[in-house]
Image 1 (tube, helix red, strand yellow):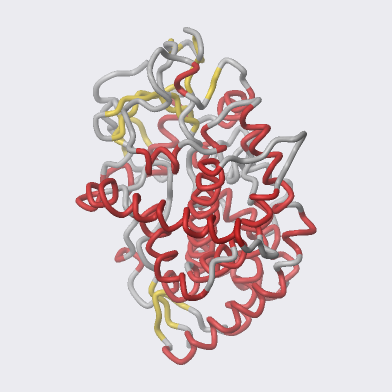
Image 2 (cartoon, rainbow, N blue to C red; image 1 turned 180 degrees about the horizontal axis):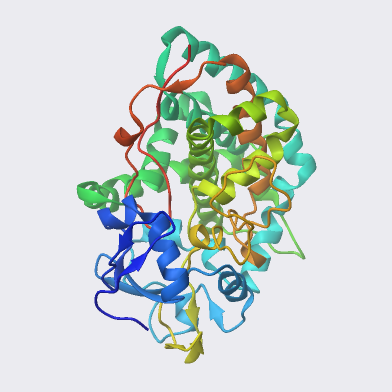
Length: 417
């Protein structure tokens, strides 16, 4: 392993001098993320990193990330690898319900939970949502057209998954203000000065709201996913109430954030590559491969949940101690030249495209097909309606949110005509 200051030239020609451990939420890393990824892949395939005061190891090569996700020596439940708790520090009950979900579980618990919710995300179930997503996107674009210049994040990319999740969970329209508050708490409240309010007030209120919704569904089940979760059985098993609440928050975080930022990242990436945008306009049949390429090239999710080795081991010559935090960086793996031909080229027709934008292995994103469907419909209708779509601010004014494991923007101001 390398320590201290090390200089290396990035593919763009700039010289990096990363100081280890690399600060994954630092301004320099956020501004030069892909150059750092290239340096780590070449110079430190098992790299020392930190998130605030928390130390960890990160993997950036494609083959390493894939191998780790299938290696039985690694678990997501930290308590199985250490004498400590499930997480490196104690969590309030409301936060634990958000954190202790299917994606932080291991088999056989993970298999049990996934099996109980799998029905809602089967291809036929997802396909039935297409017409409602089509109608919703057109309504949102009608409203945006009256404004002319909009923040596409707030007026389009966020409302699409918000409404889809509302309908999947069967949240009544009268409850939408509390539902939106719950969504904001679960997805935007864990950074900066707002964190203490989130921990002490917002998340407990969000959990109380979701318990009220669940209680209502028990009394009056409807044709929605939450009612199905309460009825779901597999081999005589059911979800208990905390598991249902946790699954609801998982759907909110994974479905809402991933999809909204996938849509906005796709729009920005296409605007940054006008020749590929025109190619897509000329051949809308390329939309499925274009969305896959966005997931590879500028996908919103750049890392999995942390993994923990259950024994001391060596990886690429670097020692990994039992119970230490290890993070595969999918955003770096998706630009690995050993896995992708010309990885720095954005190609809407790229095939094959074995990206890791939705993860890999048993934890492959359960809602991947829904996110793909929402994004394809959203992009197709946006590009058809507004052929003169362009950024409303200089590109350098766009700000990335300093969230570890994510590549997402605070806003996306655009002119529609």
